[in-house]
Length: 173
Image (tube, rainbow, N blue to C red; front, side):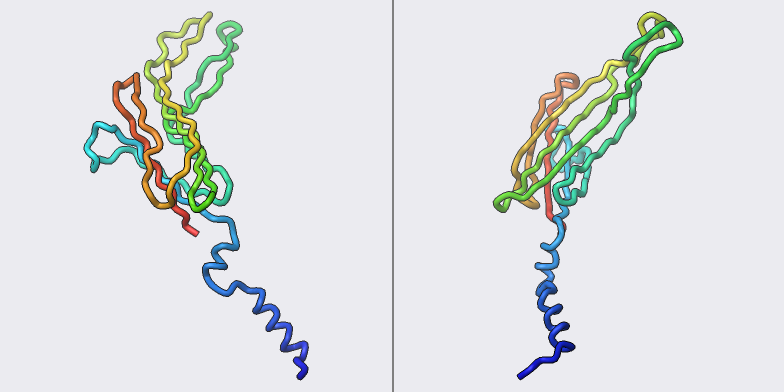
């Protein structure tokens, strides 16, 4: 029995299409939702702290910056020719996620900073700079998908408080 070319071509194309929604979902790079919760460890468990959510597609890096850019004098050639560098003060998060053996590998940098002391009066020979407090965490850890995981517990010497950082990573496609 012969099948005409007009009937065979559509049958061939249908066989190339994904058979289920699951196969269609697996065709593209995965997207992950990463939620970070920062809270004072001494606070009651139900009390909220700061919450940040990032969406990351595939092996790309997500970057979140919430805060201010502060000028810091880097050199001065007299009173009118001061050069400045700007630093990001506040919450700065960079994060990547990858799947490995049913777990999720998360790599990230968490930077929490604030101006502790504003600069004093300007001096022509030595421009004032702010004093900045910083807590920085570089991490590479595995987490269970969808399960909140404490990724850091930090004693902050500047505030004498304990900061707890929790991450939840969920695959959304």
